[in-house]
Length: 113
Image 1: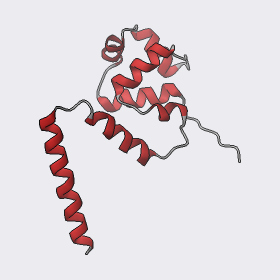
Image 2: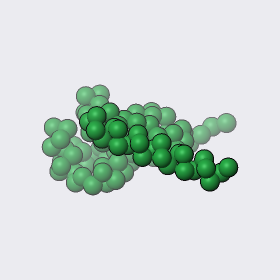
Image 3: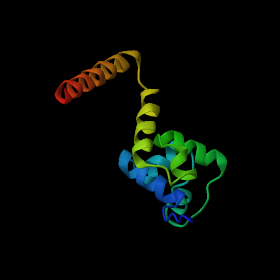
């Protein structure tokens, strides 16, 4: 079976930038490229260099799989995105997140019983 995917790497980057609330100017500055270059990546199909793609993926906390394996499920991508974001948290934040997750899971399990 042949799969066709209409979402380009530029589409993925643009959606992630918009979701993060960053302007093109802000993201371009963070990854040290011009706004015009970012515009061309997002809207004209310009393929970024490895270094720029690496910085965009890291800055936007997106899974490389969204770009290289677009056929993978969105649910998996959201979980992977959450895990990547956890790496940027301090210890206190991790403890709060962990306690919250455990409480939510325990509550859901009690409801199912």
